[in-house]
Picture (cartoon, helix red, strand yellow):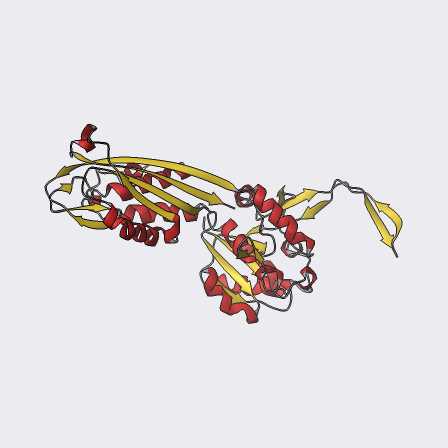
Length: 373
């Protein structure tokens, strides 16, 4: 089933304060909307932003397609649904841009519920006493039984919610109200107190604190060995170094890139190069190893991680690594998308002990650090 997330980001959010609408204010180095997008990317097939006309120039920076929204939330959702109608997904998740702390578990709960229901949305049961009031005085109480605080993403079968919006008249509190007006049953899935909507200035500090608590830091290690054979150069960390012998392997035998790649896979708990690129498959014969490293780095991004540091040590008596270390760092940085000051490539000998000391081959070890916020 193909699933699209519509992220509604056309509002101005004046109650949140600041010089920019709340979805464009910076938290932990990125706009609120960027954090929201990042939360959905691993779990949906594509994302559509619904934005204010004044903000459309920002869409390219976020790497997502976008359409212009309307004067109300209803109108913005309708604009998003209409934009998908020519190539409709099976499911659509409609989410507020100002809820950047939506969790993977919540997103997947909503999607799973759509297997049995035409609509599904997260709700948090009301547990506090409820009052009515006027002029700062309590005027009464209200039974809280069966009451929920509504959240997003609210998920639907695309055809059902598209039809419901087209015939709905007036303004709705959310898409669940539109769906129910059309006779659709909407399942309640467990919401999350952390999935709150940034509304007031103090909410930014609360969101920032929760993001820090939710940080996922991982470290991966890699180790690889390749023996010398015939050749006139060795490939090390993407750089061809002239040498009297070459390294043997199914691919180009770049022991440095192989080791870094395995370190990333290890941090992600996603196996090793052999699982993703089996040596028994002839299509990888002689393959340049940057292909493997780009795949590992892309997988990290898809899983919501940022590679923050790479440290690779090459173990050999020859060739000399020092004169080429700068070029190697630059190559690894380019392949992975890191700044070069986050990449370390260095070398050591084994004091002429063991197979590397005898000049039979080159070994490498690497450590990578990945962070998800």
